[in-house]
Image (cartoon, rainbow, N blue to C red; front, side, top):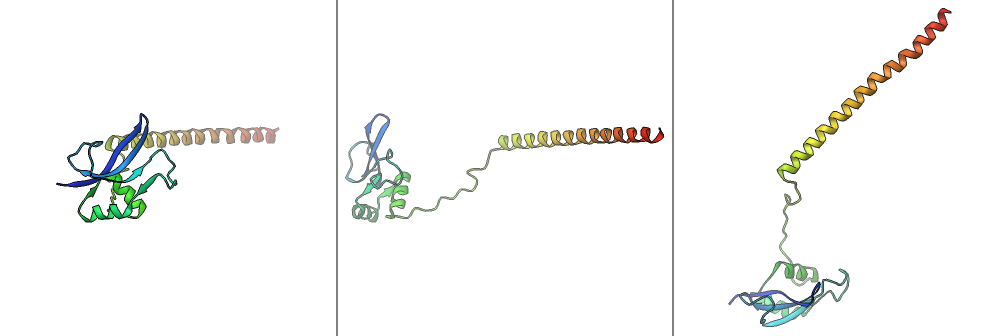
Length: 143
């Protein structure tokens, strides 16, 4: 019989409240469990001391006899300092997909072309302004 430490949902609709329980892995989520070892109230602030309450010695016992915590419970246990969670480092997780990269490249190309066109227009307008004052000074010099 494999045993897991997991969350069992309680509370009203849109007001979740969880019991941290030790249960047979094949038992239903909110069904029969072996022992309740804590509570988790996600509605409370993250720094509230009542957000996660554990009976640490019982959690350590169940971990010692081979109970496997679920991902969420493993996070809670890691934060409480009961069991260190294995690092899950996925550097490619935040990397955009192929199509998003293509769209970004297209945007960058269009922006670069627009800047070049604006710079060329500014360069073409600048010599015309400079020629006009020089022509005026030449006419005044001849007179």
